[in-house]
Image 1 (cartoon, one colour):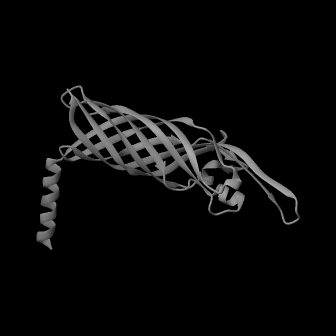
Image 2: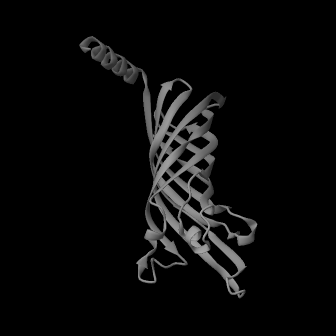
Length: 223
């Protein structure tokens, strides 16, 4: 057992010595929206996309010349304006309409977990990259129609604490010094989990879900 442990420690130490870590700062203006999983009778509509912002620290851990494990810590705003309109007959035959428009603003701390694939130089000092992976996100703040408190209850309680999404992207890096790089790219974020249970309870249908979507323009500097 001791020999196996020493062998593993030796392997990890050797791997770490061969690897290279690049840490950077990233800013990501994001065109955010929502998508719905619901029957047509509820008439869910995306009224508009919203311009949101993400900022944070990234780290690329190179385990080979052109391959890196990428992670970091991002603070990102999501959400957009949506509407719904559902008309039904109650038990007494009366027409009941449930409708509304909600401008949703959510803020998350994100932990991205992805793989970056880098090309060789496509121009002097310039390489392209492709990124695929996901992120695990924790809600830190929420507003609905610019209100943090609704009917005596904080808006944050309406939304689920955790969210997961998949990310796909690409871009380019530009060498501007011995260890300094500028980068820019585009990333698509597709929410995998329901952001709240509010509409399920409102409409009495457990199959209704609302998920985040977004496209970000990423740029920053790595050291």
